[in-house]
Image (cartoon, rainbow over all chains, first blue to last red; front, side, top):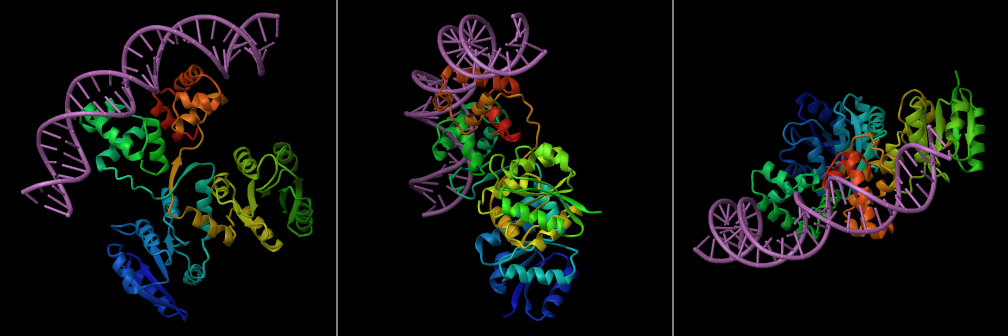
Length: 215
Length: 215
DNA sequence: TTGAAAATCACCCAATGGGGTATTGTATTA
DNA sequence: TAATACAATACCCCATTGGGTGATTTTCAA
């Protein structure tokens, strides 16, 4: 049984090269190629891949966002992210996106095939350089982990704005000034927020907001 | 030049076995062994290792705490953590402690030696199982990154407790009940906290506490 | 087109929070 | 031993916040 691989990659040269390598190697098939993430859902439903090779720097929807959506909607499909990891801040976003492995963009083709095989078999291939960057990124940091999802408190956009400003430590007056609305309107929004979050004070609201990633 | 390795491991059998392997292999020396982390600083200053093999589950000071202190005070010493990683929550604590690599406790001796060699040469060895756990741990989580250090607001222990309860959303009354002190005493502590943090309201204090990892 | 949210503003009253000041005992340290 | 810092307690005054009630306008979907 061949491993069906779909490619998301904006560079045509790289895209074609990867496709050629995959189709030219026994055990692998390239079942789909996409230059961007715009139609990721349709692309995937057509190609039905086992493994997706995802470029992290794509125009429009980034590879991170597409990976997030794919792992959410198609948890059985493994995503292998290829990156240069120049941007340090993106490392942990990419980590949280739910990919199954990370390889470097200038790893040799043989590494690509090994990595694809490894994720297909439930492994988690990480290139040494990527691993090193990951560790040094987390080294001596304080990180707060937030329970996933459950963001369905039905807060309106305006209410989310208010809550965000509250989390930042503002009071009614400064929130009103920043939002160009009256003090009393801010209070009304906040009352609605409290009802929706089932809390009765500012600090409880802030706590809940942070705990559920509403900030 | 031989690589000088110090061992932190509470199990005597494992400890002796590791020592024997290291001393029996050309290129490696065991320069120190410790059954716990109580005297980590003296131990290290005596043995002056290049690499430390750290057991994560030790009595007293945990391996995570010791690793944190070592990487803080001796940034040139590489720490290689050996773990079973049964406890999922510990993964990211271990990550943030600043270790240079992670291997599984039941990896074969050959893997140990390879890993020690790899960290010594600036690499970041991560056992496949550990890598898989790490990725699945971060998968689809929201994470808040916090600026490191700068915790020198000179808060007393009691004040930190108060602040912690405030961050959790409690009011004066419930803080007083939980801490078994009076309402007015809580208020006094909180006033002191506000002065030390240079804030003037609860939400600002909460914000600052989270931003600086005081919670 | 009619109704349901959402967004805006306002007033009242009670509860909570914030700032100042003061006293007492205890522990640590110079 | 004296000085210093911290913990704990208490009171006053006023600012801010929380809850209720009510109203107008807009927007969006059934």
